Amino acid sequence: MIHVCPLGHLADTVSAHGLRRVLSLVAAGTAVERPLGVEPQDHLTLHFHDIVEPLEGHDPPGADQIAEALAFAARDDGPILVHCYAGVSRSTAMAYAIACAREPHRDEAEIAETLRRLSATATPNRLIVRLADEALGRNGRMVQAIEAIGRGADCFEGAPFTLRPSR
Image (tube, rainbow, N blue to C red; front, side):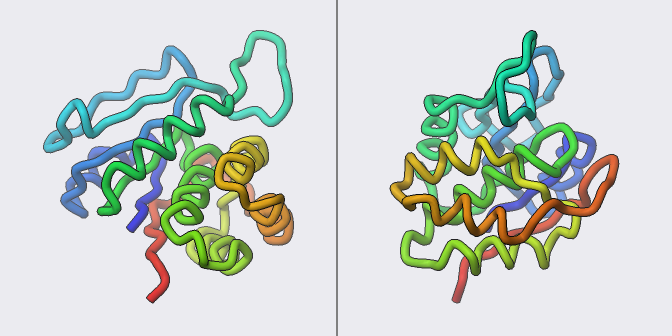
């Protein structure tokens, strides 16, 4: 299972689901306190802004960071929590990427449609999706699937949700 939430719901989501692994995707300078019950080696924080093209003074997600996040998620196929500041763009993109990595034969469009059903506000960061698509050798199918679900509803922050593997 892949849990997704905004930073403001991090501790509550970890506690409510008894989670032990956390992936934090935030801009440099954003304070993220490791939740109780999560050991240091089970909490990875990556720093980059929620942008999809170069912007002066901002750090875009990079291929190395996406590879590091995917490797962290692959260390254990158990539950993981992915969060960003709002729980809308960076975290939903990475949750989608982790789902595609964990289920390599599952259709990208089906995963994207499931993501949309679970979160009306999910607007996966297109650069993260493109970098993950390249890393996973999905030949553009991840990008196409996310383009097909379109932008999510406007919001200040997304509601926590859980992306479950197919049965």
